[in-house]
Image 1 (cartoon, rainbow, N blue to C red):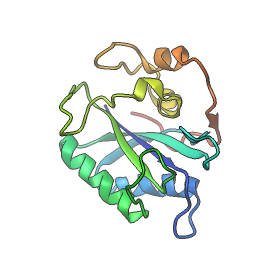
Image 2: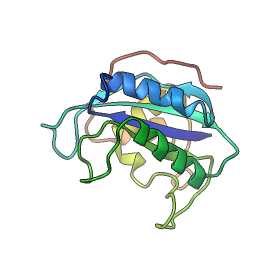
Image 3: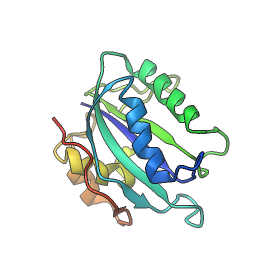
Length: 168
């Protein structure tokens, strides 16, 4: 199972963040097979909660392209929605991340780190992932998405829509 997370906190070209995330997954569908999309969630910006809140979702995808090529495709989609890379953790129009690529573990800091090194700490990834695959297990820890979500000390993400598509 390949998991791709999306987040947006800034509008772009008359699109609000909800529309950006939804349309980003449509764009992703031209590169890979999107087999499921979670509900949309709103979560406070981090590290500065006074920044605009984020809209987040998770998609399950299938592809034969490798993680590096997939990441390059995600960066192209981000650029198409006005993503400008600058200050880390700043508000942005679109952020697409590979959360997991099957059971692949890659710790090389020069390439895609898999699974995403901070996914277990991010409610804005785990809550939508639990919509689609609560029993998915982290390849390093063996903990399920539901277990990791339950272990978080605080919960602030709010579901704002229902699932877009069912997982396989």
